[in-house]
Length: 582
Ligand code: ARG
Picture 1: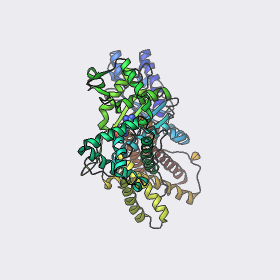
Picture 2: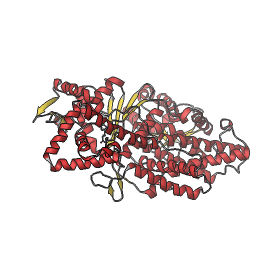
Picture 3: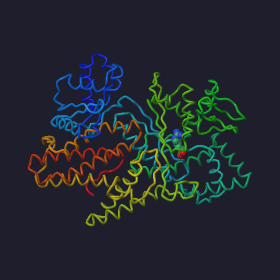
């Protein structure tokens, strides 16, 4: 049980002692105090009981506060306002609590997901196209959610649902035959594929016969023609090699790379099932699911030319995932423009009885479907968009971040070896990009600027990396001067308000990780880390460490050590490296 849960358990017994069994069904929560002038924690859950007992909340609060002798954890209980309870805890107890976190694996992140399986479908770019900056959010946010769930003990299956099937492959295959020389075919890259696609696509717009030939190539591919299959396979392999290079650089990994093509063979039976259940009906040659009663436009599952579409593939994918992995949840991370698509096919899956997207806990324990969408990233000049032609390639963006970071590193560490400088700038540059993305609520629009992303002050990746490295260097200095300490034997003394505040903040780490995961919002963790490092920085400015008497020094060093632990765990959960030296 974490600190808040322990306090809540005791408080609940006080509620029962004061009000009788009526209180036993209440959910009593204890949360960090909003104003630490009046206590360390607070409880605001008296209202429902007051209603039930038809008594003023303040009267109940007074009774609760006096009902039982205080336990060793609590120093003072006070009633405030119309009926809140403020709790001031015992510093010795607080010190024990934080010491337990520090000794626990991963700073006490609860293994609350044990036995549960979550599939996370993220990044999922389209083959034969270079990943552009729009893909960074799905990759970075998806990967942070992946790391959060794994840390909480869930079995996570990260699945890259590549767009490797669909009409564009007819255009690509015909383009390959028409526009590329032998040499160009041999030296194919994602970039040349993309250029060739544009050329071929333009031709389809001007030349109806050419368009027909593209469609014919697509049909051949879908029917398993060996030559077209081989060409398609090369397109996919080339794309994957390129994507994997970027993933490796970003330290992102997947358990599965099942593209849309993986589900091709089960599309017909999926559609038949929809028909048998009376869900899919013919309409103007196409097959559709009517979602009018659910307040949504129709969901097309087969086009009038007989081709299956994106929704059909996604429904088939859910069927496959559910039977193969029996997940508790399937989480999809994409940009906001796909919201309707997900709502629609989630609803179809619900009607099929294979999954649910409702927020209420489902009695049938069906797997829960969740679409985590994010707003598009903007440069001050406008949206990053393929259509507007101002595409910034992901790779180019990362290179730019690293080279900007290198300048900073060279200035601040002129004596460092060139190799170390390069490695450090990779950590800082990529950390800056990731953090710029993760420190915002995913559903807000981000205006990206280099100045903000790479700022050494303020809420940025480099700021937190520096904060971590500074704590490490302080600990190293202390070890040099006074010998290496066994942190676990240093007695924690929480004498000053800032020391106490720091510990109270550290105690929030495990709960913050749970909340960030539950809300699918890595920014909850980013905000926490930033605020922790701000408290640390005030503590450090006001509380001499190395110049203090040995018992105070050791206590403070242990506090610093714990801040380093939390920062290190937290940044790792966000996929951000933590060099010890910057
Ligand atoms: N390939 C799609 C795109 O780039 C994203 C796929 C998301 N996942 C899914 N199961 N639909 O827009």
